[in-house]
Image 1 (cartoon, rainbow, N blue to C red):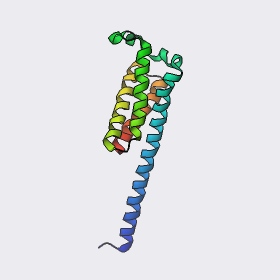
Image 2: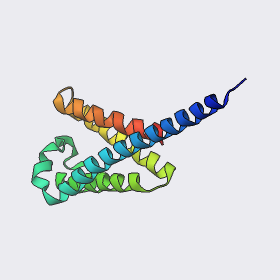
Image 3: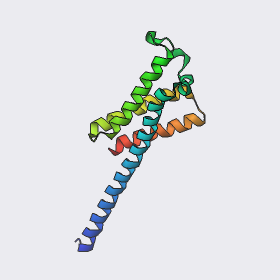
Image 4: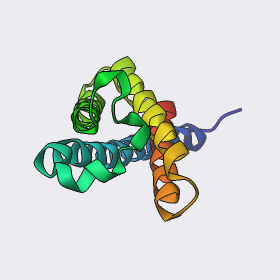
Length: 133
């Protein structure tokens, strides 16, 4: 038989867990929007800082130079940051998977080093947000 105190404890725990999940979603959203928004916009503002990160095999791919690929990636990253902010669950989940896929491709180029470790953390953050949404 449940006591009145048990019901209050259960409601408190449920509320606490909901607030924790909401906080985790907010932190992960902020992180991904900040990173991808900054990276995407900075590719247009300071392209010379980024052009060296485009793999050589992409130069001339589909007849487009590295500079065009850099702009395409900048648009993709900025769009992903915006999509995460749209308050529609499926749109946000799509953005998370898009980011995860992009970072997974980047990891194949970067390899195992300090930048790869950072990017792996971003990959896990995007997947964590996907599952929390």
